Length: 65
Ligand SMILES: [Zn+2]
Image 1 (cartoon, rainbow, N blue to C red):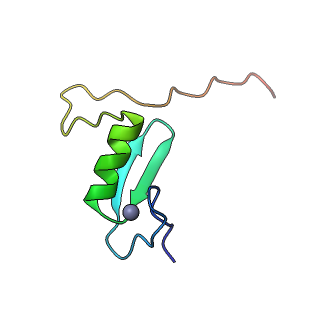
Image 2: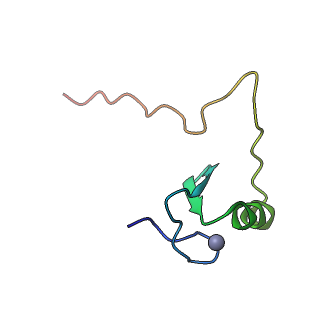
Image 3: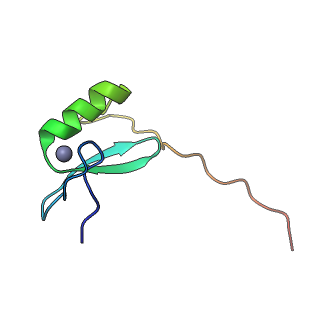
């Protein structure tokens, strides 16, 4: 089973539209839902970044032993 569309809750089907967000990757049933979600949450997804930066910082190294 695929996860439900983040916007309308429908089954995302065999070819879901994914959208990487700071909170994680979201799946949508169609590009329309993905576009609306981007607008609602103001998520910017540059198609190609010359200098991609990691969304999540490296976890701090623990000195526990
Ligand atoms: Zn949808």
